[in-house]
Length: 96
Image 1 (cartoon, one colour):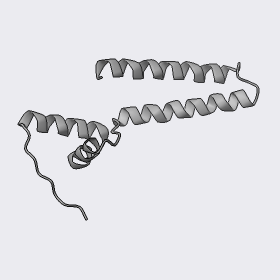
Image 2 (image 1 turned 90 degrees about the horizontal axis):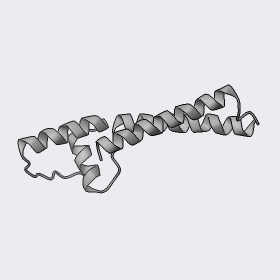
Image 3 (image 1 turned 90 degrees about the vertical axis):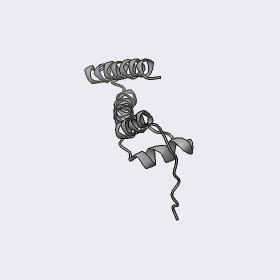
């Protein structure tokens, strides 16, 4: 059974919480619950990037197992991963 917990924040903090929750695709309540209980909170863009990195990694694994790691497709998948990792790193530096 869920029970309500109430606390007060400034209007600025309320807006910040709403923006952060929206970026993560969560309600404010769910966002606060996850943060308070130490559960991970990823922005939708971060989750999408992680899915794409996994997909590209799967392609590279496929090419490696088939012996065609030097193929045009494998090289393109590696370039894509490098680009995504750079973008992810740049985002982390802007928003630590």
